[in-house]
Length: 490
Image 1 (cartoon, rainbow, N blue to C red):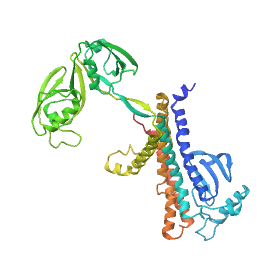
Image 2 (cartoon, rainbow, N blue to C red):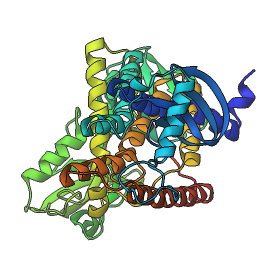
Image 3 (cartoon, rainbow, N blue to C red):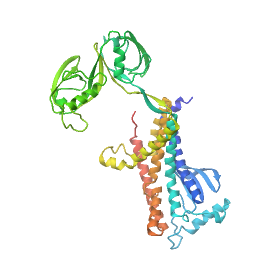
Image 4 (cartoon, rainbow, N blue to C red):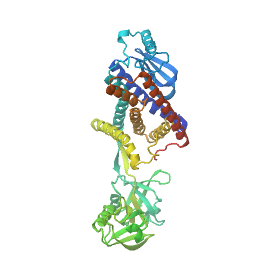
């Protein structure tokens, strides 16, 4: 019934918008609303979206709950402010330090119509500085709290844990035992005789210790389809080696003639440790740094030797001889196996671990956001990776996570994304730039330093300029997201 919906990119984006952004906005504004109530501030309107108004849903106490046409945010309208803060009024004499009286009186008249007595009305301007800061910061706080709760739910539903290894066929001769059984290049082995194995070395041991047929649970490389084969392993032998994935330019390995795809089978005449071929080679090169050594290696089925000297102080990330490696096991008839992506299973966490996960994940994401400018300056992340994303971009990314969650049966994927968006929304709103919450808090802090508030009309003008800048940036980012959509790794 819903298959067509799940395959339609536009409809999935709309659904993701409804699942990701609207709840984050509602939670943010609900934080402001509840804080206003706790501070005793009268609230006339709680809105999702920006005007024009679509509909008033209902009235909660003296507060109208409304939905507006422009899905770019929301607001809470307390007594003494409008959507963007204080409003300049040309008819209001020379008074600069109060909100235009007729504006406030109109609001009070509205509250009277809703049954609120004058003595129960509290303007945001009349609240203490601490109460105003609490009111303005509560939206971000609500986003963070909701993210913690979402991460806790994710952990209770299940976190991925490694339950076994996988081994992949990386070379395969046509006449080999494995090829004759119907296995093809790139296929992945997940189980031996129905049992998981914890490393490729353990898989290799299971093969060579077998005295007859073994049953392998496989996944076809080209199609991803699972299948099962039986292989006669009675006469199979297995040898350990180290597969060279890349060779650094001008490194000892490069100068000795080693190439990507070569398999190191000996170091000074000694074969790599069967349990950990790569680890044993690394230890050997460290132990022989500065000393010429002989490496035996295989290329195209032939064995060769080369001489090189492991470096004492290699460049960062290159290692002593300048190769990227992985452990490899191969049979005498030309089949080789290398580690593949481990097998994971979603394991529900107990409540205490789920709570710890919720706080840790939230703290890690907040830390990442705070250090983003530093990472950009240092070049550890690219500008493209740190680019701002619009409502359109978030909806598209959310659609991808939603699709994966549906396909894989893992609701944690979309819940994680919702939590991250909520955190980003909260932190972004705390930036000290009017009309964001952080900019409004900045005005209160200036008031505390000066001993008196910033004149209303000055504050209003600054907020409006900031609003125009933010709206212009939002339009530009939307256009950029349409031209160059942000993508997530597969």
